[in-house]
Length: 145
Image (cartoon, rainbow, N blue to C red):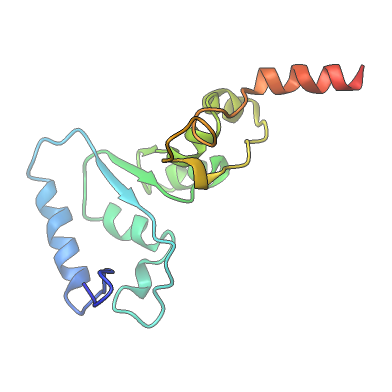
């Protein structure tokens, strides 16, 4: 950790993480979540783990069910699964903004725009007030009539 409380990679960060992932194979875990990295890692000891680098790196070390998360949409998730990067994709923020996310993915329908400023607030606004696709289509049809 640095003076602002933020994580800071050091020379042993990758080796330590590899050790942890390899040790996880010794346990009967149902799954492990692996979050992709959005931070700018250039110039750090973990620069090679940026974006999907972390997915492919740790997939080689963990043999169990790997659930990938962070910054993955339907197309990207499909690609990662086809490549063997993981076993499942978790869509946290997309689920908040799309209560019918599975249906939208199945239909290839557009997703609601996320409003992260309301995710963990003290009201329904921006957390549980997103419209369902069916309701949106009904409103669109009424507006066209």
